[in-house]
Length: 174
Ligand SMILES: [Zn+2]
Image (cartoon, rainbow, N blue to C red):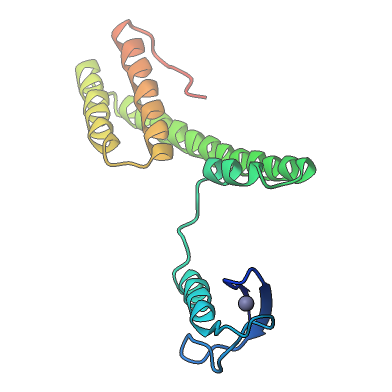
């Protein structure tokens, strides 16, 4: 059942619920005051509602959502919504941190492998530079979160590279 509200040309508002047939009114409706035919208006209302149901909008960003509801919601609801957003951001941050730890582990492993095989210094430097170049190539095609992660990886590699160049043996990635 779909609720339909009609604002008749005579000024009367009337509302009813209807089970549409093929997206339209199954019977004619008339204004209870002036008896004007409201079927066409009702069909327009139904078309609008049904279109909204079959073509849901893409999920809005949290900021769009907040801006949209801020004017229409009670303050305590806005606060609850902001809490939910903060929690969502905290969850994303946790994912990023997990990603950072994985990145640090990957780089530590790269450094360990290079050192374990007594790779000459210039080859180690080249390996780091190649990895940096690969990561920078990836950077353009990534989502925002992944870009941050990649930038961080590149930053860590550059630190490692610099440390090797200046003669430091080991850099703690953590
Ligand atoms: Zn009327």
